[in-house]
Image (cartoon, helix red, strand yellow):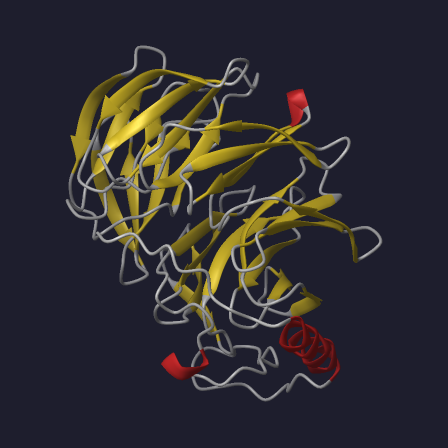
Length: 349
């Protein structure tokens, strides 16, 4: 895969204009449903199709699972599709129209809804579990990766075009800080609440910026990656895992020193690096080989490789019990995986 190091150009005036239109679009969102199972029109303002994509040459997908593990949200930036799937029945509940390049989805900790970024629209939408638009935050074209605090009070949003991270106070419903100094921060962003640290990947220079969330400043940078993609951090904040799609490995990083203490060979073009809640396994999504690699994060070795997925990327969610997982396929179906049996047990959607 050829790395794209081009930073999309956007003027300040254009960004402000887009944000103003986005604010207006909340008030005038249509209530007329599209064809399909009663979707909600979300009032997008960008031109649809490839011509309206702000950064359409950057491809990714996302998957978020509700805290009660009954609902999944899957999206693909190339098609613009956003889909709600019932995990209990495996059926598609609805497709949400109006998006151009949806980038990242994350559920609120209380399960009341989820937040979805769209880099072409320049917004992060707060959407209810029934697909209703609850709020819209116009943060500028390039809005990409998102992370939410455990108490649901703060949302952190990467902007890969502006090279910033915006901090949104969800209780006050407004941005409260903009952190600068990044280099194309895309989907990779993860919180380590136990250490007041936010880890932000920089695709342009293959690094991770470490942000002190108490001061909203970059305090350290970690290098040594190769086309860095997904990242995870242990519950105690001591270890970080990062997917290197350039050399087909997972980096294991000591967060205290920033040193790479291990490198695990996995499948072809790994994008995902999702750690189980109990820390027992780490799953990769290997795009080119259409596999999921199961890594023992403690030993730094591969346990097994799971087949039966279709070009998976970062879009992986692991259940609370750390024995089951869901992986988004390229066609927006979901592969449900039994981790212990190392196989796909059913395909949803």
